Length: 205
Image (cartoon, rainbow, N blue to C red; front, side):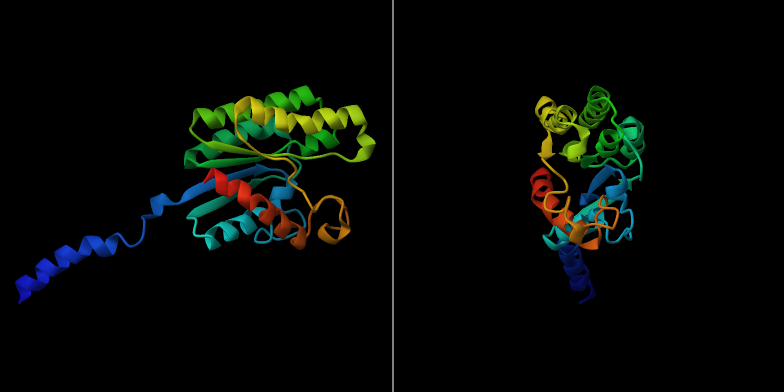
């Protein structure tokens, strides 16, 4: 009888182990962003990277979304920050930088080169990229705004990567979804951003 049970356990053991994929199957998504990703004015659990992770898991994806947002950051820090994230071998990079460049009037050519270099490094390491586009207030001048907003689309076309045309779609400029400063999303705003990103991220997974 003991020999029978031993054989049975050997036969059933591998099948039991196959019911759940190993933890290594989990895909890592890095959100490289500024104060919006960082969740300025709300808790980390309410910021859109955490919201996005929850929505993806509800759909059955095995993912970990890393919030690599730093308030006040510009595209100048993008390349060095990505190099730091490479150690964890992410599957997808959500590149959400450029907003602060625009607000500070940084030359679009400089921002574009910073983002382009970052995308190239990601692709060289086998990382998929999703660019999060941004827009500027009307008082920044039509020519500068047009160049800035087209930058994201041009980068996506050049590098053949995914693009979210406007990260704050349905949120930007709406007081009910933003903090009193009118710039940073509140909890409801972050929930909408996470839901807006979901279909774009699903395609990359």
